[in-house]
Length: 218
Image 1 (cartoon, rainbow, N blue to C red):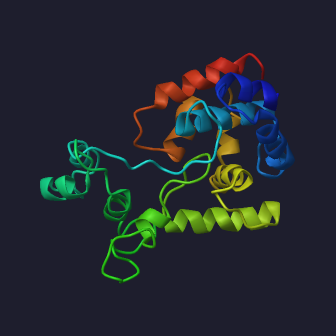
Image 2 (spheres, one colour):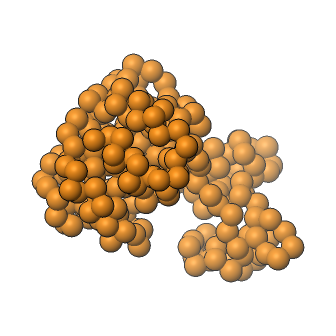
């Protein structure tokens, strides 16, 4: 049912056959070997990346007014004004990531490489959301990479399509999400998976609605 799921949930995907081929190549290795498990997995992916199944990283192009609402303990009005987007300037996404994710999820401080600048080489930006489940943070990257080596016998680059998919699959099996998926089609099952994938999201219901779109194919 992989292709049918992708066609329904990701209708703007141009290379559906390539996506399907990669998923089918690895799904049995990562606890996605039943229609129920795969449906729950793809419902989560759909909310994380949208209707086009393509390689993407976390978008941090936030307006200065939004930053303190998302990270109230990280962004003062001064920092938000300095790094956030406004009518004249683009957001400094590198600095935003480095501040937002400093000293958490295994990352170092905002200037983790010690060069005096918050840039693309620092942990926050380097380990921003990646893969089809948008894995975030140095610790999580390392754990996911271990599973890619263990179950696929290869390193995975999340900026390639295969690596993008493998990163999400590796997170799925690392967190034993297939065990939750096996409990059934109820909304509580979807919520249990969402709690682990993206605990503080406001999209719990959206993810279940994505699942409902393909439930009839299970």
